[in-house]
Length: 424
Image (tube, rainbow, N blue to C red; front, side, top):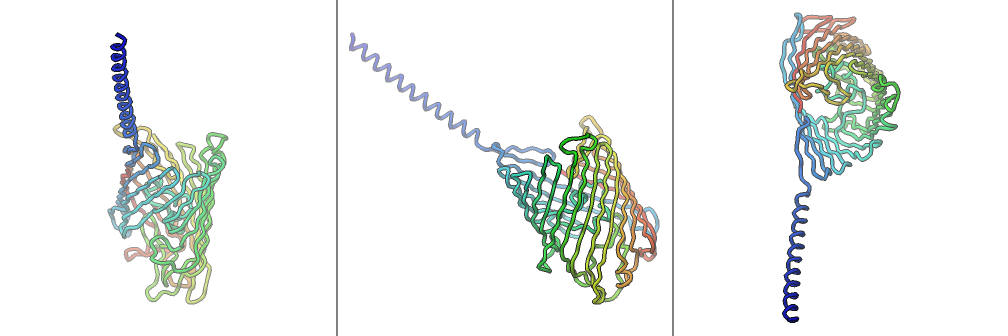
């Protein structure tokens, strides 16, 4: 009897052990399956760019594109002809790896060709020190930091003619004291991103400081107050007959200084300096912005070197209905069209003035004026955060001397500009 009991007990123990081994095996398989399910995977969504993110959040990427179209309508005779153009088309890609490295690319197609507007590799681990290298926007001027898609008025002010442009270089930037102080300093090639070679061994140094005195506390109405300063020093070398910048208005494209026929009598060759100041107060829904820039360059006129200068400034004021926008960001539309609302409206006006030295008219025989004023106003409608429709009016006055246009000499002109764009 006892032997039979032992046999039964042994058989039961063997079965239990086999069952236990089977349970352990099933648990191990379930754990493997769970690990496979939790393995890094990608999530994809639009907000409004196409965004990618791995499940472990170690890799993030965005892809976007935009198209900007301009239609220009002359209001009076002897003004520029009516035109329509796709002013700019672009594609941008950005990726962040391990929260420390960022790669950004933005290419544009313009009416006169294509360029790489942005192409950087950055170390972004710390807010107080971000290091970047590649094709970078120079840290000068508040207006220059804005992408074309989101500037308040459909065209940049004439002050942008005197500011540096995108260039090949390296920068260090950061935000300190709870975003109270923001800085950017950089070293640049000095010939622009599209230059095939560097004409001199000297490099351009450029820097910008922005103070937000009430960012960490204080009156709420002053929380969105920006005060900034920029400086740039370097060396510029141009081919004979090439001016320091294009003497054309940004709204009408009219040349207000025209070179005489014949061989050039000047060359830009030597040191170049820029100093700028800026202020922005955006309490919402009202906005106020102003900037000033001074530029000096060494120019040889028939072998005699002279210091030539250009001063420009602008002031603008605007008002928002149903939205707002932070500097450098796309607009925030409170109630988009087709989502229970009508979008957002921005009305803005700007006055710009530019004055340049008279060396080109006195020593090189240029025809035109050394002083230009522009009065501009625009209404921007944003049905949502990715679509913009703008109507702009600009009146340009040529002070002191008339400028040639279409076989006539004019002292002012005005145009309407209709701008449509999509950015996603």
